[in-house]
Length: 195
Image (tube, rainbow, N blue to C red; front, side, top):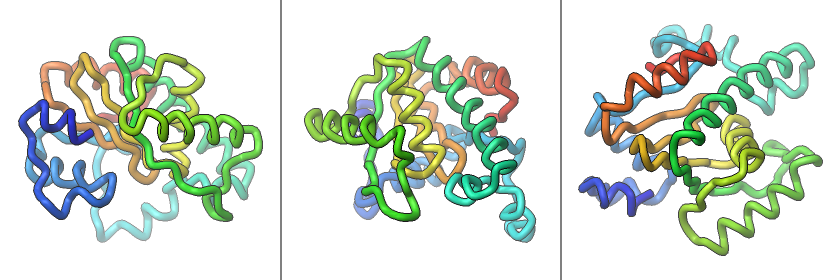
C-alpha cells in the first residue's frame, strides 16, 4: 500500500509503518474528511455507550458458538461480500494481506484451510499487492477480513480507494472524493452505511 500512497504524494511518517492498519490511522488523523467506515451502524457509538455496543457487536469468534448469532453474522458478512463484489466489478482490484497463523482463537474453518494455504503462498510469491481476478477468491478475502483472521487491505484502482478490515467493519480512504456518491450507493444497496 505504501507504493500507492507514494503515488498519491502521501508520505507516512515514521512510527506508522510497523503495523498494517497504522497507515490508515495516520490517514484518519491527517485527512479525516477522506476516511469513512462501511458499517452496520449509521454513526459512531460514543465511548460512554461502549458497554451497550459490546452487547450488540458481532465478532465471528464469539458468534460461531451460538447458532442465532452466527446466522446474523453470516447475513451481515454476505452484505460486505456483495459490496466488495460490486466494487470489484468496476475496478481493478488488489489485495495486500497479513495472514495470521492458524491458532485456537482465529481458527480457520476446515473447509477454508486449503484455500488459505494457497493464498498464503500466492501473497508470499508476489510479495506485495495481488490482483484479485476471481470472485470466489474475493469472497474468501472479505471473509478473512470480517472474521479478523487476516488483516486485509484492498486497493480499488479506478475509484482510487484503499480499504482495510477493522474489527467487524471496513475503513475506506478516498484519494478522489468524486467517487464518494457511487460508493455510498453501492454500500446503501446492501443496507449498510458509509459514514
